[in-house]
Image 1 (cartoon, rainbow, N blue to C red):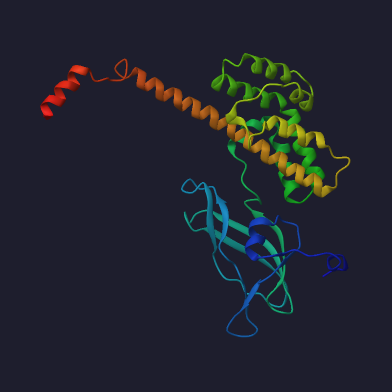
Image 2: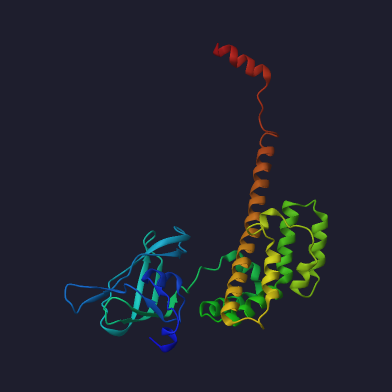
Length: 300
């Protein structure tokens, strides 16, 4: 342990937390890294079941993954390839390249990820990629910077994505408003005017009316949330602070894209359902009073 580490409290992780929550490129102090085997010289890395996103069509969500084999760990440092597989579908794999160091107590130690495949973090939904358009490459560079703890770089990439895709973001919100609240002409006019602003922050400031409830994030206007994050700026912030803001930017942008897509999809399904009902024999069937009366008489 370095002098810098001893001068401040060092966070201790479990092996499960290391695999699930720690991005590549960081030394991680781990408790209960190893368990002793039959012989004193034998130590096995403790590899618990972990919760990860499985992209297989049979899962498409968070599932339990299990290590495919055991790995022997000697005292000192060693390199490993660790393989996990989804317990539900049995198809999706998660592979880690890491370095492990066993402490003198033969239980705790250090873990370091060189990398992992698929990459660290939740997958980017297709709805988000659609919203990003031509800026998707910068978005993924922002993701990589965020995963590596490069806060200033991540924030700069995400800010570029939002500002350069301003018109696309406003177009999608306008399209949503036209579907769910077409009579709100004032809001639509404000959104159209805001889209003409060259800067995203100025565009958001010009909107005075509320956007549809379906697009609110925890009761807040997502455009206002993005505006607040972008207005915070880089200059007076540390790298760690920029990392927090960058992560918030990504989360809000991702949620907004999902809400837009889901709202449009739900609206389309509702219209289809109503149309089918109305088209079935002209109108929905209604029993006449005479038929009801005759049915009641027959039952008596």
